[in-house]
Length: 382
Ligand code: UD1
Image (cartoon, rainbow, N blue to C red; front, side, top):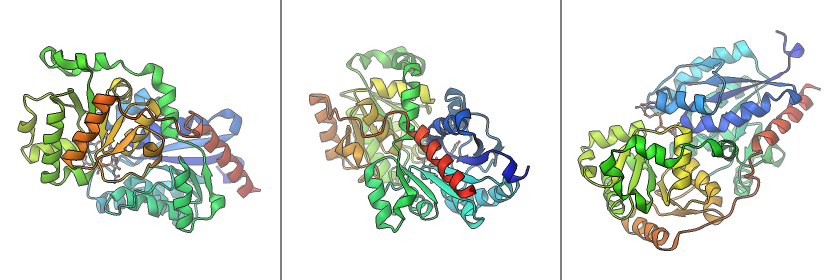
């Protein structure tokens, strides 16, 4: 079809688990008939396991991708290059009016880089977040994607300041709120009750001390799980926390592999620190909502716990989401056992930070994004 005779088309890209909850409300908003836009979905295939992909598409009602590049895993270079190679012919064929990428995973930068060189406008949702730590692969992906994006949507005000420091023109930047929190609000009433999840995952004997509540743990950052010394230090202090409040640990595949490879699984046997498979979105939401505390190195979970008012201890030295510390429930503890113990103590004894909901985390970010995209694309085509 000739470009001019069809609705303006936005090709939305997803690749990895944290992208799925961001794209769900964006696809809904872009395809709202009122706007007259057409949103197509492309999945790079970076995450492919049922637990890492299919359950999210089902639970979040994300349409089946129009295109699946099926790239799978690989080193950063192999994965990024493979996405680029497979994306280019698709872009040539579909000729969208813009592509939209979310977050900071390898799929984000790979597709943005292909599009910008073909003069297809790039829209980046969740732009401008900076940890200042360039050893994180995601930080490199963020900085580079923002540099080549034409339209940048931000979740918190600090992001615009970061972008301006890096020379991005202010008229490209729009503060719209947080699409991840759109998904959280949209699905909160359907969250699977934590009791049901715990009953399914743990045996009766393991559940006895859950009357005191529980904590939830996630760990998958290379800096935490790739070095066996750091991983062991973290697992030991978490097993110790488990003696005060039982901990449920849905384990990302890369983390499980590292734990097994380093023989550290024996460390957790017989403790109240329970490794379970990755959870679906609605199970995870229910588990977060009811937790006494969450210990994590994930970026998205720092935001979700702030939105839920649940205390969060971040097992990293920095965060690219400072609003979760300044206004929300987040405490940065890093990987020092003393700091982790002190942060947990404060939460168990005094309840931790209650926080408040950041500006525009109101469940309507995707609607704002779709409206701005429509205006900008129409301007371009006049
Ligand atoms: C990726 C993102 C990270 C995000 C995380 C969420 C980058 C640079 N990193 O990291 O920002 O927080 O996703 O989950 O893009 N694997 C499976 N099944 C899958 C996918 C992966 O078993 O469906 C295993 C493979 O062994 C693979 C490893 O997990 O090698 C890592 O997957 P990969 O996509 O490379 O990065 P993540 O660590 O998941």
